[in-house]
Each structure stands twice: as C-alpha cells, then as structure tokens.
Length: 437
Image (cartoon, rainbow, N blue to C red):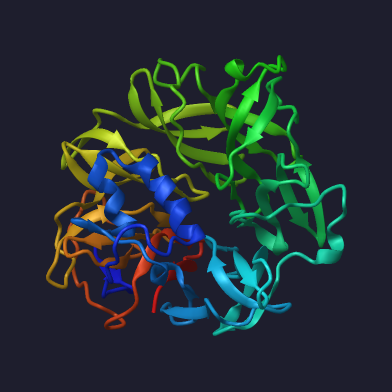
C-alpha cells in the first residue's frame, strides 16, 4: 500500500494550558477517553515528549480544494456573516456535496461573544462564500437552542443539519434542520423503540448519514426516574425518526459477555440494506469493534485477534471509520505497538503501524481516528516522532496486510499544523479540519 502526504509540517509547541479554544478543550476530553496509556493523548496536542496546546492550532478552518490540496476557508479575526468577527471555531464537518458546516463563536465589538452555526460552499475561500447555516426566522420560542459552546453540528444531503444542544430551559435536545425548518427531533423523555426513555443526550456524540439517520450516545432508563437505573446507551434514528437502542451498558454483547458501557463515538452509514453503525466498546470479555445493522450486532475485531504486528490488546474508543459498503477502520494497540487496522469483506488487515517511516526522515508515533471514502481511501492525521502532525491518505487500491509506506513526499512543502481531532471526511474523499498558520 502506498501513502501520500496532503499536509502538514512544522509543529509549533506551546506550554500547556494557554489559549484553550473550544475545539482544543473538546478534543482533549476525547483524547483522555482514547488513550490506552498516558502518552497516547499527545497525538493531537503536541509532541510525544511535550504536550503543546495553543490557539494557533485551531485558528484556521481548512477544506479540500479542487486539486485535493487544503484551502483556507476562514480564520479567527475574519468577518463573520451577519456581523462581528470569528473569535473561536468548533469542530467542522463536511456534507456529501462538499459543503463545510461548522460552529463558531462570534464577537461584535465589546459585546458578549455568541455561538452560531455557519456553512461554507465548496467554492468558498478566505471568508468568501460563508453564510449562516440556519435561518434565524425558522427558530420558534418553543424550539430554540441555546449555544454556550460548540454544538458539534453534523450534516446530511440536501442541507440537513443536526446537533445536540440545550434548549431554553437548559435541557439537552436533539435538533434537526431540514428543508429550511428547525425542529426539536427528540427531547428528554423521548421513547425508544425498545421501551425505554431518553434521560440525556451526550453533546458532541452525534454522526449523520447522507440520508439523515443519526447515531448518538445518551442515557436511558425504564421510566422510573431513578438516576441509579440510567444506562449509558448508543442509539440510532431510522428513516421514520424512531430511536433504536444499538448497545446499552449491562446488556448482552455479541461476544457472549455484557457491555461495560465504555462506548466509542459511533460511526453510521446508510446502505440500501439498512443503517449500519460501527462502534467500539468494552465488554466483560475485553475490548471489541462491533458492527450493527437491522437490530443485530456482530463483533468484527476482538481483543486477542491476530495481526502481523501481534495480538490486539486495545481498541480505540475514538470514532471508527465506516463506509456504506461495510468497510471499517480503527486505531488499536497490538502487543504494545500502535496500529491502524481495517476490516474489509470480513478480513482483518494491518494498514499502518507505529515506527514506520513517514517518508521525510521521521517515523509514525501516533494515529488519529480514520476517515474512509467509498473508493477505498483511508484518511487520518498522524504525529511523527519529532512532534509534527501530517495528513496521510491511502491509495484507491488498498492492498491487505501491507503496512509499508512508499512514495511518500511532502506534496505542499512546509505547511501549517493540523489539529488532528478536527478532521472530518465524507465518502467521496472531501475533507475539512482546523489548523494554524
């Protein structure tokens, strides 16, 4: 398998705990969940020996351009649609048509900064082609979100947007924006098909298919209003808006044990045969990668599975990569070495491994969450052993069990740092991420 570098080189380190942006804080929290051991959290936030966090890593919004290279959509300090300037960015996402949707904090003069959701047309560049994603006229007093932080919007086809945010009473709510209308798709107390009631939606956990199905995390119970009975649960909405429970803490797991409740962020796709959900979880038998469809789940990677690098000892609780054809990719640890694994047609393959040459004089140290395209590309951020973040992608024809990286080159010379926790990829291979200058 061969890999090519999109960008980015030239990591700038900063002391810990200065200039924490919204995206930095959110990704740092996710990293703590991702790490099999302490130093793993350094993938997105700095070098392997010195965690560096700075607003310069989240100060610019990038997206894939017509030639595949990254273009700058906007940056902090630029004018925002409707007035004011951008003062903070949330984690972006990319629609099937290449439109980028992102939340941002905007400051007008000396007034209190406010968050809103914006969109950038595929042809947008340097602040041109930006607009508010949700028409304020469609927001009614009975269904109004309160944006205090990044609501992590997700997108589908035809301008569909969904996000989890507090309503005006402070209760987490699942909002949908479809055909120019904002609705409260599900509120606290909404029933699931399985007979339980939703007691909490987890902010930042949602993922949407092009057709509008949503996967997300939350808490459910049987309606007894007893917090001790609430269970951490992975859920998915179908095409009719009904909510199905995919996996729940304490419930039986496909490996013959029970879910402990340590679920990853879910990945979701919508093939004609029914919605697919990929997720990792810890069970009473160990860590596993699972694939759910039409009410049934199977385990496709289990702790102890053999790979060319050794047995799988840990599977990341980050979001797996998933396509509508059922190809799944995930970061893992095999006999103490970090690796990127893929399951295609039921076959487990080692894609990349820790310590492999990057092609520009260093070696891979850490992997971020992968994104997949239907053509077979795997995209992800890596950190090398010199503390630089770079964006790798596989060729269209992925050769199984070939972890070598050949013909790597810096395609765009010295480029800006990429904040790995912000990478989003659609199935056509369009991408977006936050970075610096």
